[in-house]
Image (tube, rainbow, N blue to C red):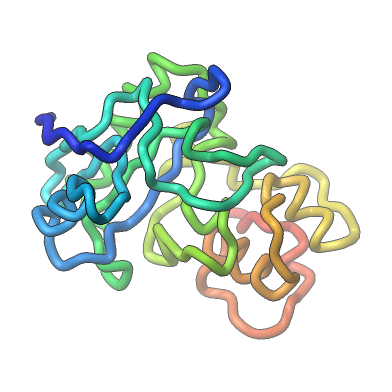
Amino acid sequence: MRWHASPNHGPRRNGLTPSIIVIHYTAMDTSDAAIERLCDPAAEVSAHYLISNKGETVQMVAEDQRAWHAGAGEWRGQDDINSRSIGIELDNTGFEPFSEPQMAALERLLCDIRSRWSIDPLNIIGHSDMAPGRKFDPGPRFDWSRLARQGLAGPTTPPAATAEFVETARAAGFTATSDDGLLLQATRLRFAPWRVGAQCPEDVELYHRT
C-alpha cells in the first residue's frame, strides 16, 4: 500500500465513525488518471482508497476523515453516507471484469478495515445500492457472491421475503428515495445483473440462490 494524499476531505460530522463501506468503480481509462482526479481540489471528489487492476492499493484519505465519494443517498434509513462510510474505488471502466489481483487486494483491504471498525457485512455496499438510478457502480461485472461467501458482503440467500417488492427492497436496506423502476434496476445490479424486463417473482427475493 502507498499513500497519495488528497486534499478533498474534512472531519466526519456529528461525531460519526465508519459503519459502512461503499465500493465504486472509477470509470476512467487508468488508475493514474483516477488518482489525479481524486486528488484534484477543483474536482471536489475523493475516496479513502483506490485499488488498481494490478492489485496495488493506494490510500488517499485517512479513515477517520470524511472523504467525498458517496454524494446524496441513503442506506438502511441513514443519510450523510460520507460521514458514515469508507469509500473504495476500483480501477475499472464499468464494462470489464474485475481482475483476480484486484479482487484479492479488495478482500484483504475489507478484512483490514473491519479489524479497525465494527462494520456489518450487510453495510458493505455498492454506490448503486445507496443511490438508485443516480449511480450504477460497481456494476454488473462485480462479483458480489465471491465477497458474500467470505462474509464480506450481505448473504446470498434472503430472509423470508415479504409479499411486495418495495417492502422487501427497503427491508434489505434500499431506503433511498427512488421510483419503483429505479429501485428494481438497483437491486438487479446488486443481486441479479443478468435479469431484464418487467418485474418478476424472483425480484421479490432480491438475492440469487447460488
